[in-house]
Amino acid sequence: MRAAVQHCYGPPSALESSEVGVPLPGRGEVLVRVGAASIHPGDSFIMTGKPYVVRLVFGLRRPRQGIPGRDLAGVVAEVGKDVTALRPGDEVFGWGTAGALAEYACVRAVNLAPIPANLSVVDAAAVPTSAMTALQALRDVANVRPGQTVLVTGASGGVGSFAVQIAKALGAEVTGVCSTRNLDVVRRLGADHVVDHTRTDFTRSGECYDVILDNVEAQPLAAVRRALAPAGTLIPNNGRGGRWLGPIGRILTARVLSGFTGQRLKPFTSVAKRDDLLALADLLTTGQITPLIDRTYPLDEAADALRHVAAGHTRGKVVVTV
Image (tube, rainbow, N blue to C red; front, side):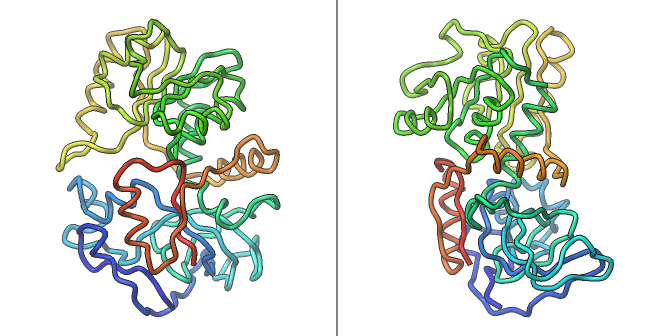
């Protein structure tokens, strides 16, 4: 099968389009014939091995899994032992630990759900990690309730585009922060208000919000807190940072400060759950959320897809078609 293969940590040019053997599903796994796979900023961190702390999980000298990619959609080709809920021919979407940028990938059956009937394989592949992050941040961490005010930075990005829609589905009044070229896009996503960050500093506007999901973290923590209600919740959600520990320093600072203020500063790490994937499938089926696709790349151009995401200016999700 064809796959995007990485033999060492490095920039996107480290990826090679190669022929490799088709993996065999183990106990509790299924073999998926991949139709599309989406790229997440985390894929870029794993590819480069920076911040270096990621190597403690994914391999000290080289990636343990040579085929990158986490989120995918496709058709079940074969089921492993003890898999009863899925069968060959089922159209599914979900996530694995790696290996999605290939014609076939082995995935745990519990990480998959049926593709909603109103979704294409490209749209379905765009959902899992980014939409799950937005859902858990707003529903579980911030406990967003109807009538609350929610501000989302990076509102046109992968997580942000889902966050705007999910916040609306939860009944919030939503403000999206984005660049000039994306104002209309964020309005179409359902934002009640939009802020052009190239012209307006939301931390100095005088407005206060019950919840801020900061996917960009372009402003100091103290500045963002000016725009947060006295008992509001701030969720920093940008994985970038120092070359050794990434965002860990910012996370620790937020946790320490949270103990000295009525404001809740809640950095978090999303944990993929099938129940949340099913909840997202319901929102997709009812049209309450719709994936925003920036662009698609063929599998042979997976390196270009990763390069585009690493640049940090995507409008929605980037998807690799297989």
